[in-house]
Image (cartoon, rainbow over all chains, first blue to last red; front, side):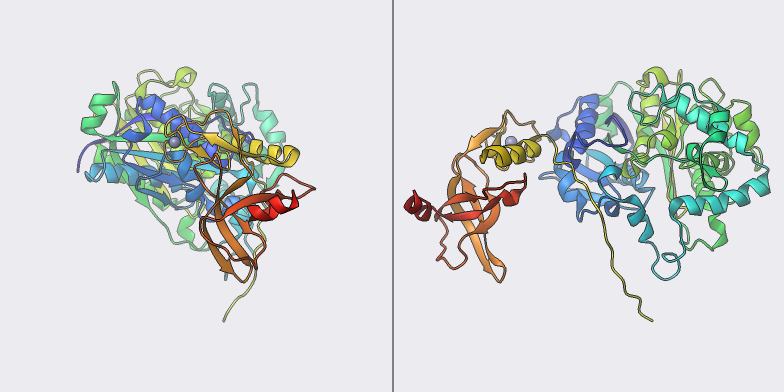
Length: 384
Length: 138
Ligand SMILES: [Zn+2]
C-alpha cells in the first residue's frame, strides 16, 4: 500500500438555505475551492467519490446531478452511502483507491441541501417492520440513549450546555459555519426549548445546506504539489447491528467508535490520545454525544467527560482542542458533515485554519458517526 | 407476512443561476437561452452555469433559435419524444414532438411551440412541431 495525503480542501458557505445555487452549483463551489487549494485543475483528478443522503432531497441518482459539479464527467465516479458516516467513508474509500495504486489523485465531495427535501421523511424510511411505526427519528433515538448515559455516568445538563457553548463560539471563528454565536451562554442553552427530554434545541445539530471537498493524492504527487501534506496515518470503520433495542448501540457503550479509535491509535502508534493528539474533529450530532465520545475515544475514563469539558481541556486553549470548526453542532449538511470533519483535521495539519488554527498541529483525529451507531476514525499527521 | 405502504416526498429545488435565467426568459420573453463554454466553444442548451464536459464556468447566455433539427425520436403510447438541437446550439433538448400522428424522420426541421400563458417551466414549450406547419400559419 502506498502512502496517501490530503493536499487540498474546500467548503461552501453553509447555511439553512442556499437557494442561490442548484445542487450541482453548490457541489462545484466546494470542488473548485478544493482544487484551487491544491493548485490543481479538474484534468489532474483521476477519480471522484461522492457522499450524499439521497432520500433527504427526494432525488433518485443524486450522483448524476451532483457529479457534473464534481468534475466527474469522463472519470470513474462512485457514491458512498453509509448514513451519517457517508462522508468519512467516502474519504476512506478515496484513501484506499490511491493507496492501492489504482489512482494517483481522487476528489471527494460530500453535500446536502436539507432545505430542498424533507429530512424527516428520509429518516422515517428505516426498518419497515420494527422501527417505522414507533421510531421518532434521530432525535428520539438520541434522547433514549442520553437518558441512560446521564444516569449511568452522572453527566449533567449544564455539562452538555458547555459543549454547545464551545461549539457555537468556535464556529464564530469559522467563516464557513452555519450557526455562529460568539456570545451564547450556558443559561441560554439551558433555557432553550425542550425537544425530547433531556435534549434541548441548542443541544442539537442544525440542518444545513452545504458541500465540502478534498483532494487526495499519492505520496509522489503530494510531495510535488503540496508544501505541507496531511498524511493519512490510519483509518478504521466499524458497523453495528441496526436494531435500536440491541443494547450495544447505547451512547454508554458506543462499541464501534471505541473499537475504531483503538484500531487507528494502534496503527498510528498513539498510546495516550489526550496527550499525543493536537486536535480532534469529531462527529457530534448532539452535545451529550460529544461527552460520550470523549470516553469512547479514550480522552478520559468512563464518567470523566463532564470534568473534561468543565476544565476546558477540549476548548481552543486546552490540551486537546475538539472541533475548532464548531463541529456538527454548528454545521450539518449530513452528506458533507463527515467530509468536513476530515477536511477540518487536514486544514489544521496544513496550517491553513486561520482564526480557528491550533498552533503547531501535527497529529489530528477525525471521526464519523451514523445514527445506526456506525463509526469511522481517521488519524492524520504532518509526517507520513 | 407482507407489509405494504407508500411514500410522499415533498421537495423544493433551486434551479440555480443559469437554469433560473433560462426559465425566467422563457416565461417572460418566450425565448430559449443557451450557454457558451469558453473551453470547448459549444453552446449548451438549456443554459447552464458550467460546462459538464470541461468544468469551466459558462459565459453570458445567448439566445438560440426556436427552430431546430430532430436528432432522434421515439414513438410511445404517451406520445412522440425527440431530441431536438436548436439552431445556434451544440446540444439537444429532450421534448415532445407534435403532433404525435405526424410522420417523423431524423433530420426533420422543427420549431418550438410555446404556451401563451407561461409559468417558468420546461413545459412552457408545448413541444416541437414541423417547421412547414408553422410557416403555413405565418
Ligand atoms: Zn466545455
